[in-house]
Length: 298
Image (cartoon, rainbow, N blue to C red; front, side, top):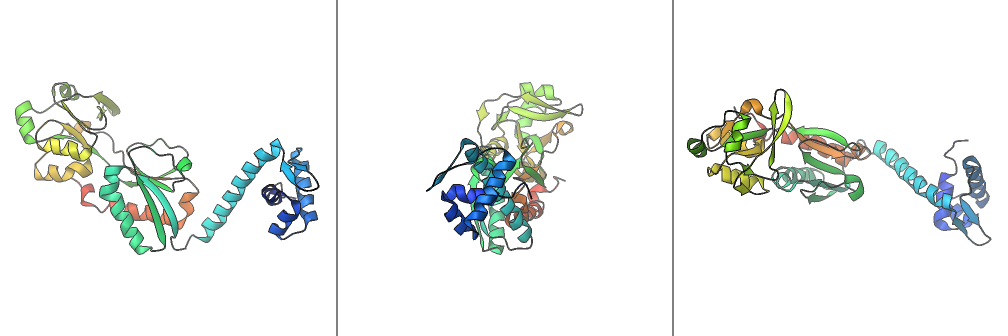
């Protein structure tokens, strides 16, 4: 006898409130249900149900055990469905999240292309600069930038992400070019979402707190201010590579460029087995790598 025998019978009785109704749901006899639950209680050495002539109710142990049994049933169904769906067409609802600016510019257009290929799919995209809890929010997928701190999730690298310190030639003519990290203290720094900028120094990552007379939590706004010659900025490659190529911006302190932090797809382990998540992650990885924003500045 398996230690799992009786779980389905127990859940059915707990939800129906009667052995007879549970037996009808499962397509077995009432005596079979009663025997399986009795054997389950014996193995657990704990009573799960209060029995009466008309209805049954859960003991405290039964209430706790029911929650775990339902999770086990869900996991079992996910496993069967995942293996059966490996070659299936993506369908159903896919709920995902991404940061606002990156999502609007890159991720949503690619998801729309993916949906055009798979018309049975429905998507719910939450663009938010808050770090949403995928498990708590019931999300299938997140696209996140930078470094990760998500131990319960699976991470797949989608694209590079390098940070550039740069400024317009007009600003450098006026203020001079910084030659070391220490020189940043005398420069006007255009601050985005954080006033701590990340650099590499002596093979280690270091953070410096910068100051300036301008701040906005929008990368596009920081870029505009930098192009106007207001000060130094530190922005990801996809904002600045075009302007570095044209000469509208100049890359600075390249020897201190921070380590590549990447664009990541994050998903709960069981979600990665479903076609809708697996195929979308592969699609994003392929298409993001082809974007001109990710090519070398040359």
